[in-house]
Image 1 (cartoon, rainbow, N blue to C red):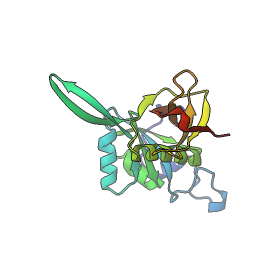
Image 2: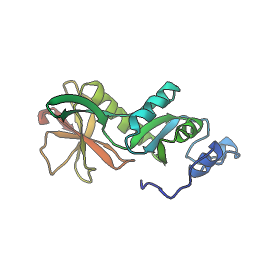
Image 3: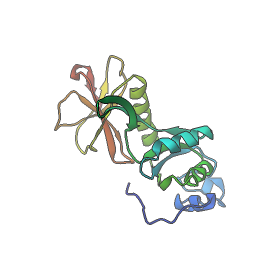
Image 4: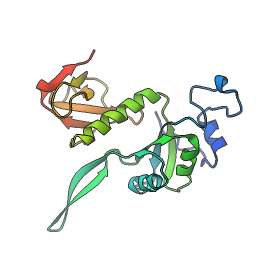
Length: 199
């Protein structure tokens, strides 16, 4: 989904409801599929540069559920080596909450734009795949979004059950976890013998 950079700053819940095409005054059975104001759903926050960690920490301290996938990177400063954890998708934080909490996030001054995920089920599934991979200690690397490839599932080992795409243009032992809402992906090296095709 393309980012809408020309949108005005969102200042209140009613404005958020309009952006998400929610009629807050309509009876619940007539509201659009975007959801209700009190409904918990996934949103993507497009942040200002290098504000992902600060935003996630601030929202976590307010008990607002966020997901910020991080990758382990080794940086060298002169002769010193340092391990740092950087966002896998720079500029983005996933937020799972109601619209009111989204308003709170937008008021931190760290957010440029709010991206609404039309397919909540798909985004939730993709985020869960990333969570599982990171929980198993996977080393993920950013990868270009894929257009073609084979949908596969890991059949054994610590990553059993993970689903993703195998990109045709690279080695067949790379599983790609994709976030369609962002047009981004991450890849994970894995033994090709552990992959089965998912129809």
